[in-house]
Image 1 (tube, rainbow, N blue to C red):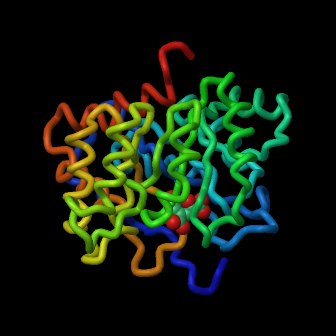
Image 2 (cartoon, rainbow, N blue to C red):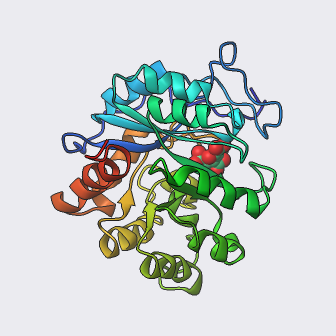
Length: 293
Ligand code: 0GY
């Protein structure tokens, strides 16, 4: 593991907030264990091991029912750790994979069978080498037959650069962590409102209102400076928001969050039972466990 790597919290608190039955942690990862599932040669960081058993224990500890495991860049397009976690989950985890444009149909079939329902396009330069846009378009075409969607990760200042590409994708599109706003700027300011416009003008777009720990300048435990951004999105687009822990919190440098405290932020951003049910149950179920499955 990298010398400055912060391992996940060893003893998170039990949240005061009780999630509704069927709640989904719609953004989390598994790392390794490296001796079984080695990290990719081209990775940009080397994390601690954070395997499926620890993830499922956290799910139960936090009072959640299901996980959506998102392929992390340290595993590249080798989805074996993800698939293994899905197979071990007794149907309680679904996945978002990373694939290359030349991925075989056999592999896509296998991923679907395991429970993958999306692919991730990562535009964050510190995490991945840039992929040509035509590769992403080709991947998007390959996965539409499976009914999958595309998860995109970018930072606020990159939105204009990728706007044309992502708004022409033929699937539902889920944006990680609200497009990573700079929370020192106002919610009503031009930068965040550009992201709001993306959602307002494209009904196929969803947003994860996750990662206060990554976006906050104020820090734990309340992450109050992030709350108005997330609440704005939840209230304006209640049927198109998802929430996740982001466990095991890759590349956190300022601090390692207490996952229980992160759960306690939920009622601040989704302030009614109805909003919480949509955020934690209805919306993720529509994307990851559709009735047509
Ligand atoms: C996240 C955020 C990060 C890392 C990854 O796949 C990844 O490596 O997503 C990050 O470093 O910001 O969503 O887990």
